[in-house]
Image (cartoon, helix red, strand yellow):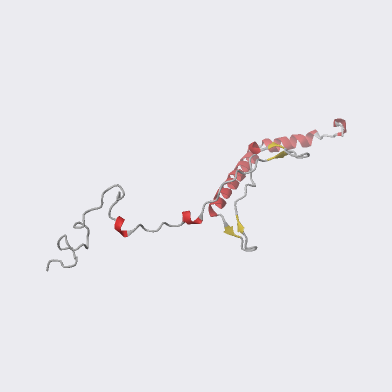
Length: 139
């Protein structure tokens, strides 16, 4: 197809250029872009969720990419393509769960692994250190 076969209507071309250069059009495009990015961020926070119709757990996908991410086509006939997302190892569920409380003997010593064990007379309930409710206490 030669370039001489193309017929361009100058009036229509000027209308399109004026429409694309209009400030309200640019503002609408920017607002829709910010809405889409905010929507994608909110969806990432709520992921994964169960699709009520299919029952499948949905995960995040990167469908909305900026034009700056475009690279030349990798295959024959491809105009452009986008880079693939980097693989990341998923977190284990047991790491996300609430940790179990520590062993009760170590709760009163914040740096117990650095300090020597306290003498038995100081520990509550040992029965030696005074009126602390121990066995054989003072009556």
